[in-house]
Amino acid sequence: MNKIKSIKKDKSNNKITSKVEKIPANKQKADANEQLSAIRELLFGEQLLRLEQNIQQQNTLLNEKLDNLEELIAKTSEEFNKKLSATNHEIMENLESHHLEHISQESVLDDKLAALDKNFDEFQHATEKDFKQAHDTLTQSANEIHTSLKQEVKQLTDKIETTAQELGAKKADRKAIANLLESMASNLTQSKA
Image (tube, rainbow, N blue to C red; front, side):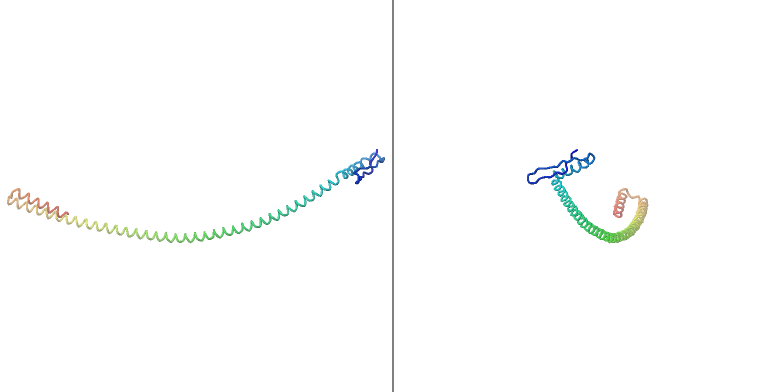
């Protein structure tokens, strides 16, 4: 079989020249792969080189951007952690302040509640005492009025009996009795008022 020993590209007139030689068959397959690689190199070598350079540039650019992104993430994360820590500290201080204020207000409210309880107990005791005094005074007044009325009824009864006996003895007329009863009724009405 024939093998293309070398392929050359003439740059002045863009022609490809080759030399053909006779080579054994098993060597010919290995050489065919080499020749194919050489042809590819000639035909696509410059493009592959540019492509590899472009890939290398893109890889370098990507690595730079990833490095910048990592730095940005680290910086942002650090700033966020600082802000989070500051905010957490501020919240804890506010909670502590509110807690102390709450405890202070709770103490004031407990004192006021104790004072209100004491005032209520004093008011209740004073009210019970006043009601007892008023009840005792009313009971005493009622007893005095009852005694007074009893005495007046007894006096009037005695007077009626005396007058009835006198009238019965003197046999007074009915008109005199009516006048006497009328005057006693008016006396009784005036003593009740």
